[in-house]
Length: 454
Image (tube, rainbow, N blue to C red; front, side):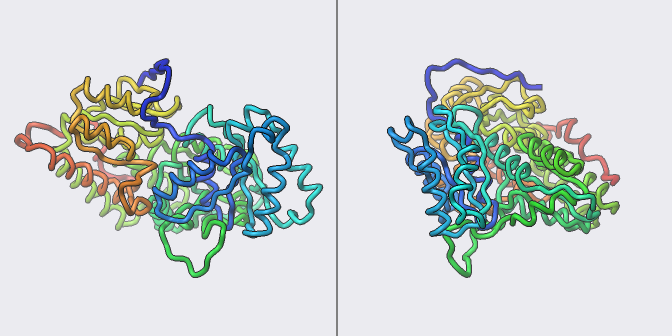
């Protein structure tokens, strides 16, 4: 169990954290025909827009209520109303998703009340669904905003029903999963004869495809009809602690039982996922997945020679930190310096002594002090990598100095194997290695390699 350290620095140096509104906007981009709307200043939205465009190399639909000094003091109702009407007239979205920001949260705008008044005054908005989530910049971080947005969608649109579809499951992938990860998880569900409803489904909207037509809204993703139908599912599977609230909202609205998985990267973690799917479907694990498991075991045996004893400095959002950090630990590496953005219950399961809620300056100093041989974080860690002379493995958002980010897979047996190969090859390139028997496979990994019984 990691002990959480919260240093009281006067300022952030080379920040690691991204804001809640940006995480919420990213979640809403997994909805079909949606226009995310940040209720705040134009600069807040512009920053988030540029960051997502650079990461995905795609056009990103994101609008703002463009608050200024006067409207901030007098209230933002008029700005919000004009924005909703203009978006409806020009883009014709099926859903407008409003994320508050630090500006409007500090002012104390009653956005829910404003939306009720605007609905009454503007009948032309009757054919457009609206959802609002409270995401102040000064609380939480990217994963928290993402989770809050999905919880708001579930709370607003999931419909209770007495009927149950035995083969239908709800899949709630966290903010740390790529569009390709979501596709991989969907395929695993379908391998058991299950039909997943994914919320949000960024694999449909941000997977880097060339659309047949152009719209000013999101292209693909989860439809409102699918969200409404989630109440009839047999079970909900949430990936990441920050998705627990959304799973609980579906359970509250429709009584759907749920399971929260810390991660789906790593041998034991994938075994847990497949055992869960096997129980829900009432089917044995398919032979092809058993074959993939055997391939992952072999990849772990091949790779542990290069991971063993390596000290790693890693900085990421809590659930991503747990997923990647746990895999590194299972492969024999030592998590010598761990930095994250905000406190989370997930950090209790991190196999490290301490984790610092801090910034990339904390990562750089900690890596130097611990004598680390590898840095793991997003693209903003490249300067620290250069100064320390250490290789950098990029994970999470943003990765603006690499292409194909939406197609990276690190979940399931195949994704875990790919991640092991990626990191292992970086370690091979860095230094010559001693004899293979110098680094035995850790006991935890050997225990995890027990035969699959489900």
